[in-house]
Length: 104
Image 1 (cartoon, one colour):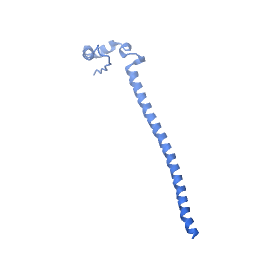
Image 2 (cartoon, rainbow, N blue to C red):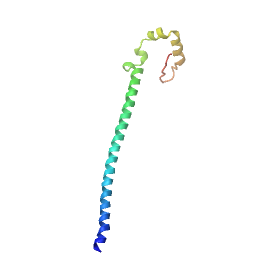
Image 3 (cartoon, one colour):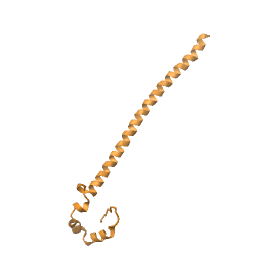
Image 4 (cartoon, rainbow, N blue to C red):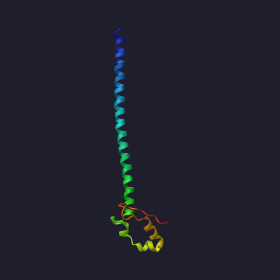
């Protein structure tokens, strides 16, 4: 009879040990998943920062406004009087914002 009572207790202890191992394994896997997610997020923002830097470098060569860097004569030779029409149409001198023009 004593053996019959020990058996369920042993089973419960065994199941608790198994459960404890699975909890530790799940916690370990969760930590690994969190590290992977943090790495992916960092990589995503690093890529976005690089793309923003490329765009900034194309709009502000040598850290200056493009019109301070590029010679307007090159654009005038390429686009003619139409360039000035676009510039006048798009300019808003009293507004404190940048305007990006594309000329086709």
